[in-house]
Length: 394
Image (cartoon, rainbow, N blue to C red; front, side, top):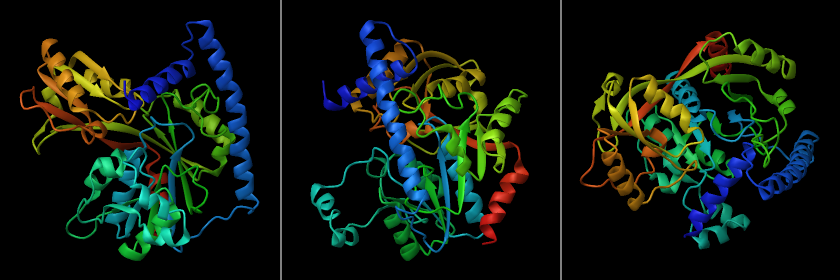
């Protein structure tokens, strides 16, 4: 068993404990241990916020418009399509946009570069990774991370109004690079709600309406990155995975109590089409109706993807799930293709985020597609337009 396998099994076990699936006495003890850690974690988070709030720790200002997009919880809110919508809309209105990402689970830099980065000279000598300059994609998903690669691929435009995507754990360095090399006048911090080193002009918070705050506990016994009361920093709140139902009025009231000034936007993730993993061929969603499918995913909430397939008339005869951000091996993919065919599947379907992490596909296999999903504003479009105009008028 490799170190990666051990890490993923540990992560999966922790997720089960967080979700309350204790089976034995040592599961209960482990949850108590996690609860104690969570109280220490919460104290550190609040201390850090106070240090920045009292200006003991410095927040950097970039001299251009900075928009932070993030969550209170870990994963699963559908953040990447919202960042894509925001970046594309701003670029279409003439803004020079760059997305700044930390490149979660991207390939580590060579040790010499990491050593240089510890020195002041090294910070200049080791530039950020440029996933896209807005005109072409320059790195693969292993070097950039799956979400930055997705954004780069979907926001590239050879004609000149594309969006640059820059990856670096130091967002200040990434932002300065984007301004200097791409003349960016708008920076979008992907997953930036907890990134306090760079001062945002606007804070956009995403809340998953199907599981807003999990068990209301902080990491690692829950999924909260910081206490719910800290949503007061948000200027706009996107309610993702909404369906316009009346049940949302309770959630909206809850959010209003914690942040009466934030403008709320309800949106949903809408399937658009199927695209061939290894080509440009596209199929309409109707192609799923009555079709035996095999579903492959390694995302935070796999049920949301599988529900899409079932809701479109697909018959899932085989499914394989891995932990979020899992990077597939060729052997795993061959096994999935073989088991799917044995189960009677006629089509293989994965998510767009998973598609960028797949190795070379086996020569003999069933047709393999990913489901393209985009954001649709259901309610509060005037608030979204206000958000865009507030940026564009600066």
